[in-house]
Amino acid sequence: MTAPAAGGSVFKPAFMLMSGRAVGFIAAFAIPVVLVRVFDQSGFGTYKQLFLLYTTLYGIAQLGMAESLYYFLPSSPAQRGSFILNSLIALGLAGMFCLALLWGGAGWLAKWFHNPGLAPYVPAIGVYLLLMLMAAVFEIVMITRKHHLFAFGAYALSDLVRASLFVLPALIFHSLGAVFLGGIAFAALRLSMVGVYLRREFPHGPVFQWGLMKRHLAYAMPFALAVSLESAQTNLHMYVVSSYFDTATFAVYSVGCLQVPLVDFLMTSTSSVMMVRMSEDLREGRLGDALELWLDTTRKLAMVFACLVGGLMVTSHQLIVLLFTQAYAASAPLFAVWTTSMLFAAIMTDSVMRVHADTRFLIVINVIRLTVVASAIGLFLHAFGLMGAVLVTLLSTVTAKCVGVLRIRRLMGCSLARVLPWKALAQTVAVTGAAMAPPLLLKPVLALPLLPSLLVSGLLFGLGYLGMLWCFGPLKDSERKTVAQRLQAPMSWAGGSRRV
Image 1 (tube, one colour):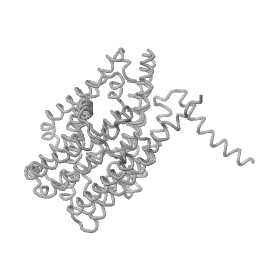
Image 2 (cartoon, helix red, strand yellow; image 1 turned 180 degrees about the horizontal axis):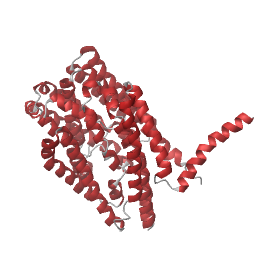
Image 3 (cartoon, helix red, strand yellow; image 1 turned 90 degrees about the vertical axis):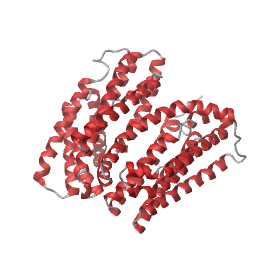
Image 4 (cartoon, helix red, strand yellow; image 1 turned 90 degrees about the horizontal axis):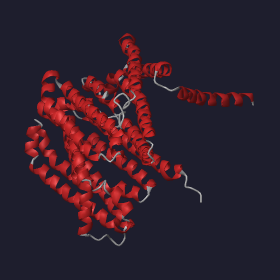
């Protein structure tokens, strides 16, 4: 019997889904870039505050009911329709509760955010949240049904339509109300497409079974708790800044905390592969191989993320002003410091704990991060201003990673000297710092326009980083040999073509 090709069964669908998400991100990223040019800082800050509410509640109010379909639909094919119905009912009820909560608390939220202009739009974001929550099952059902091409289209087209229905009303009417009406229209269209797809897949309609709902909730609730804590600690600094400063200042801060999705793409895919291989090693009793895999993955990810962080730091001013205009130049120093958090993403402690089925400790880590931010952010804001909120968030990340590394040391039964590739990490940081020096020193001397300055600074850092990484970095001899061979192959081919 011939084994199925790995590329056809796993990697091709995964690449297709990631491509759809990438297309969707590019479209979605255009929304704030356009809106900062349509609205002043107070208007854009109001938009960011409303979507801070949305993103916080969207993660919490799912109650794990959508994500748990990844478990129930493949494992219980006969009850697929019922589990999807369970999710839709729970998400609908949660959405209605959030809508009522937001509508009733609109005035209080406006006072908390020190933004009277927020209140009229809060009910609109509640309606948007309700519709988007119920539509959260869309791509998940497609993926579990192995309709990967449909899921690719859903990811890409959904965000393309969303970007259009957010941006066009803003450009035509110059009104936040029009922007949110466009958002509600998009959410309603998306939910209607969910209905069309589910009717086609389940023409006879699912049957509600209370026993399945209890089983579904029992599985989903612990996951929901972890997600709620994660959402709280991730967004707390945003709420505190909103309560301390005016709306325009919050707009500057939110741009400074710009997320770079490339980190998530790389980390998620690498984590998945590492966890599969590490699980196999542990199952076969190859504890040493599992540790070496962890060390090698951390070393390689650190080299990639350090390059990204260094490049973003040396181009932070040009990048922020180019994307968000000169009005947000004050966001650039915040963004430069914020990007350092990406370095710690290379240390994937959560993935190792999941492999060891130590998921309860993930809740402990999230509680620690939340406690650090909640207890120290007021002091940091008083001492450092807006930068203090960034610094306390970094402090919580470093604290969580330190606790996670100590936990991994115990799980893997190794010494502190062996739990991380300390020498390789130090070399990578040193190379990054050295490569940042030339573009930072030359930037004021060259005094180029914005876009050329961005390109020159990025190119100088990239060439310097790669050159010093090759000469002084933690690359292994076998890796240098492999890179040299791959670089020589195209040149050999080109030389052969010329000879022919």
